[in-house]
Each structure stands twice: as C-alpha cells, then as structure tokens.
Amino acid sequence: MTRTEFINTFNSFPAKDKILIVKKLQTQMADVLFDELDRELPDEEISMSLIMKEVKAYRNARKKKN
Image (cartoon, rainbow, N blue to C red; front, side, top):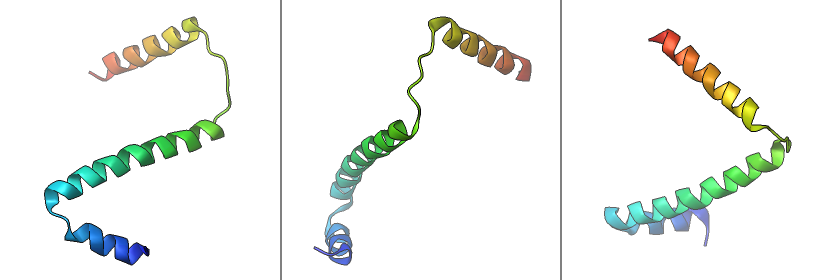
C-alpha cells in the first residue's frame, strides 16, 4: 500500500475510528522516538543527592518567579 493509498483509506474512516488509529500511532511513535533519544544520550550514573539538589534548585527558582 502506498502512502497515498493509506491516507485515502484513513480518510474514509469515521472520525471515531480515526481517533483510535491516531492514538495507537502516537503511542507507537512515542516509543520509537524515546528509543532513538535513549540511544543518543550517554549512560551516566546520577546519585540521589544530585537529583535532590536539582529538584530543590528548580523549586527555589520557581518560587522566586512568583
């Protein structure tokens, strides 16, 4: 099936079915995109104390904006 045939077939579905199809595609594509990004990022260990330090810094910066 060509891309054009697929699009034409998709367009023939009622809106309710299109929504279901799109949700399924979004889920699958999110998984693919996550896997691609995961491969690009280095595997670095991070300690819980460093995570908490970052969380506190973010919260403090947010408090200062308000």
